[in-house]
Length: 131
Image 1 (cartoon, rainbow, N blue to C red):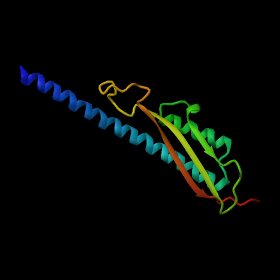
Image 2 (image 1 turned 90 degrees about the vertical axis):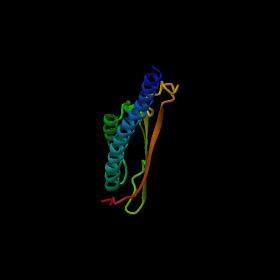
Image 3 (image 1 turned 135 degrees about the horizontal axis):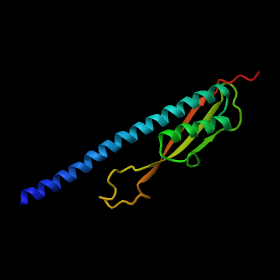
Image 4 (image 1 turned 60 degrees about the vertical axis):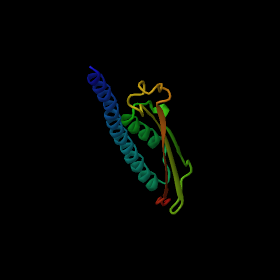
């Protein structure tokens, strides 16, 4: 009977680690999709000399598809001024990530503490030539 109880307890503990591994893979895929989206819009900002308000909304919409959050929770900070050829464009995006730990109740972590902010801070050189 003791062996059965310890086996069940061991399997339950191992299941927590398996759930966390799966959760890490899901988070990795979300972060990779976010990075791909931000990099795509960085290239657009490079060609246009800045990231316009319309492009910011497109970026927020694209990121909110990958992450379970509202568009209003995503913060995009970009230069408003049009940068000419050779000038630096700064693009910073902050995205809230939820459910970082899979079995947070097991470890006594509440849902509010089980979140974080992923920050992308990119710099690029403008290729915009004013006509």
